[in-house]
Amino acid sequence: MRTSKLERAVLLRCGCWGFTWRLAHSCDWVPNYCIGPNRHRSATSLVGMETLLVTRTPDGVVEVILNRPEKKNAVNHTMWNELSAVLASIEGDASARVVVLTGAGGAFCSGADLSGDDLVEGDWLSRMRKINQVALSLHQLSKVTIAKVTGIAAGAGCNMAFGCDLVIASASARFSEIFVKRGLSVDFGGSYLLPRLVGMHRAKELALFGEIIDAEVARELGIVNRVVADDAIDAFTNDWATRLAGGPPIAMSLTKAMLNDSFGRTMPEALEAEALSQTINFHTADTAEAIAAFREKRPPRFLGR
Image (cartoon, rainbow, N blue to C red; front, side):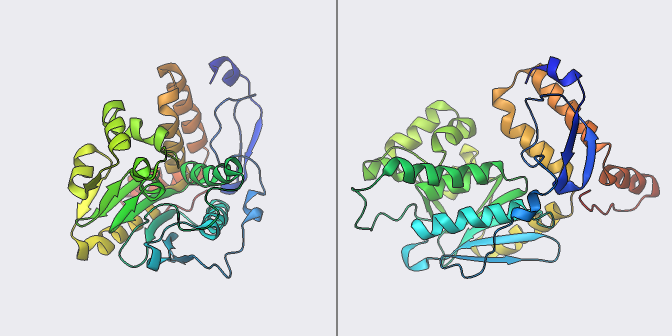
């Protein structure tokens, strides 16, 4: 971000949130969702999915369940396509506030499905770029994301969990950057995520050995937020998701975007992004509601506008 560019105001419409404000001319940092007034119209239909189950609560918690339990939810071509469609649909839905990503049948995700007959042949660069787009969509999603991990999370499934904003693991959960044991290098954002989460040397240890670590070790490394008993993970995750869904979605999305971008910024650039974000916040109904609620000694009710 060049701060000089942030000194000249232009009109920017943040259509997902339904408000317009003068921000910065040629701003190098704009929140991911601030790209036009009609973005929500691009939402994709979720009817007829083969590999995913999607549920939602009235308060805006969307649960996306990887649903190939017979394969420990290994991701095949169909699931990659359906994940791409679901994430696009959620991004375009202003009523969706929190996403919980989990797996069916006691496993989170065992990684990409390597059981097909077309593994050697084909245009792998094109395939990987499609998979990369799913990873990027998850990373850039303007909603808060929670990985609820039970059982194994390996390979791309491991990095899918680490790519979420928060990771809750059951006591029996296990994680592995298993790529090296399959003759592969890391993917699904692992080369980006791991050094930021655990530091370079720990990242190399995880990636080069590909060993399975348990949930408690993952917590000690800082890649899991909470470890809870197997029979308590649903209630714990529901509590966190409900609390987050009750928060101010615009402010939380701005905070998420700034934290995601923080390693690539100088301190002056980070401060300028904070100033821009607070300018947006102070022109929302949610911030006005929070101030009014504070003065009236009552809980605020955030509507996302």
